[in-house]
Length: 132
Image: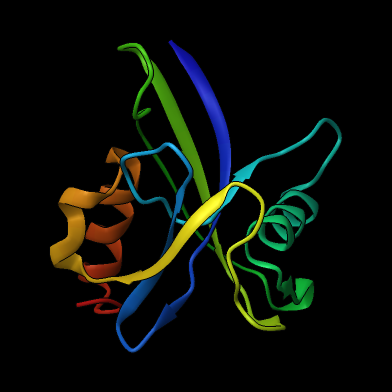
């Protein structure tokens, strides 16, 4: 099996979760991305969110939420995405940037619109009554 190591920022507001869609993609994803060589989780997640949404995560507020694994959307069978999720406060105004075409607030009922690993995260958040 091949693993894709990714980080995600879980941002919940009014029982909805912030999600994004990149240009040319057919699914929404929880914002975040892959680490660059030598980056810590904190460094990579802060960089990715700055690049994608033009806000600064406040590193001292980072809280580990969980790690989830599933078949990677759009990849060959057996390619697994490992998503390490954090919650954190931020400063600035959320605005799509770089490869992000659209930013939306999704509910649990929107699961058909998201990737397999995000579905696991949505299930977890619904179980914890953080989204509805």
